Image (cartoon, rainbow, N blue to C red; front, side, top):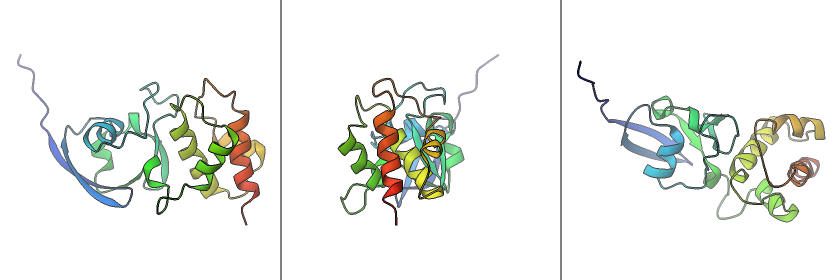
Length: 161
């Protein structure tokens, strides 16, 4: 029996505020489309299985593991990546806090941690430390021991007006 090859399709979606069109395989992970087709390499691949959170992006306002999302699912949707959270070249408050506190080590988990933190703070502007721990529970880090990351996110929340 002959194997059928899946055809490439044209998919349109908004990435970091810009409408983007790609011609790709519909089941290709969003992560790979972002990195390979759109050259947005800030989003990292950690495990490729949706377990580590390194590839976290926002899809229509929800935090998702982009390695688990077929790009077809993002059609006509809005995606925000780590590259899209800075405004006019100014780092997001979470990015600044990570840099100040030493919350970034090797850099693999950092984009996903920052995206999860931005999402958390959008849902709860003044989270308790327990809220921060819970909000970042889906993101794994092998370098920092988490304390500097947790303190950075908590500090941003405490400085919120």
